[in-house]
Image (tube, rainbow, N blue to C red; front, side):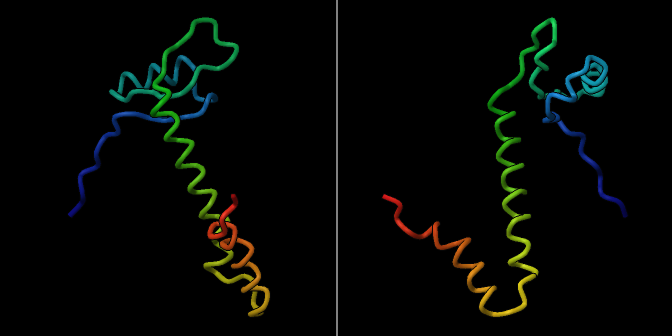
Length: 98
């Protein structure tokens, strides 16, 4: 039994995917391209800035998870280095910076 695959409603991309051919293919497939226009584009294209901003949030979340991978896999084998890594990473989040 296979699960049905839903077609995406929109594609959030970076400026590198701002080509006319890419946009046309996405629109033909019924997918809304959400990518800011390149700086050298002659005609301006409107895009949904709020939805594009969500893409940045997702990228920052994945970057944070990649940084935390060393804690999850415990790359530092000694207890002292592991504890110092935890303190260095998480202590600033709990200390009042006022």
